[in-house]
Image (tube, rainbow over the protein chains, first blue to last red):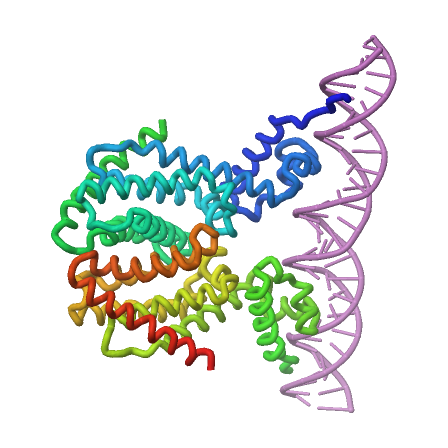
Length: 216
Length: 216
DNA sequence: AGTATGGCATAGCAGTGCTATAGATAAGGC
DNA sequence: GCCTTATCTATAGCACTGCTATGCCATACT
């Protein structure tokens, strides 16, 4: 039995890269079979041998996006102030989404997400739950199920982002609500909230440093 | 000067109706120019004389969706318990979205919304703000800007709905978070929250009655 | 009644995702 | 070294998409 010719993994990687780039720059409508083949310098059939269909290619783009988001959020350092850590996590999520809106759309808004592709995303959510848990354990949050709180935090952030994408919220307004909603969720408007809001102010300073670190 | 033949408004209405129906039943991909013309029993050109393009037709479908959502939420009766009213408002919004997920997608998730189309939606938001304001004025909520609170309420609800659509939240979980997040937003986890949660329980009973009323 | 204005039908355009078929290419056996 | 063979890639064509140029014809005014 002879081993036949194998598909070139470099072509596969170039296809994913180019597809992600086109999607990010011009949106999902700009990503067409023939254009992608032309830009990578191959034929349209290569896309079918490597992925099977355009939908499967798009799925691979989403997968890369989830992995990228996961490593981006994973680079948020943990400090001794868990509330400030959580604030920075939400801020980083927002920045990642609005920095590449078309990719975020493709990942979360364009259709259902199948579980296996979201693998890296699940780790990200676990990380969020852990950050919330640290706040609860440190007595900085009113006691509640960290999974529930993390889900609500995620929903509110995701909701603000997608309303901003729909042109129903100006960007500045979304950022303001982001900071406010996360604190309201966990603390209400009582006295303890003030300490939390001081932590949120810290988030602003750390956010600037985080951006510089990511840019380098 | 002679007045020429005028476009038939019945055809226009039938086109919008059929387009909305196809979109709701089978999603945005199912709505094609030729199929729509075939189902309505006209030619493809009629769509261009009435709307100009498929994108403009889709815009008209969204517009109808916003008007429909507005009248649906407008039928929520106001009672003497403003917190229960607000809870029912959020519940009705969730039910409307999940009842016709493809239409909600087309309205809020598929792309930017231009302001004039959202006209009826703006009224809905004003109505939400008013409901929040009644809660604040009645001393049932901690004092805060009703516009901000309404925005956060909307974001959280919209976020839960779109995460559910993306298969990232089971439906039951989304409903549970919806009830929890709205109360957390306004009240935190303090003592006052309990009275609010009793109002939320009322919401459940009124929701059943509301559904029956809508169905008839 | 005659006319001209504009809605509607037909046919064709370039583009889409996808596939059947033919050709190029690389790995293993001798 | 070559030849065989399996598999990848290229070409051409399918039915479909949104859109438009063109001509027919119904309608409302003179």
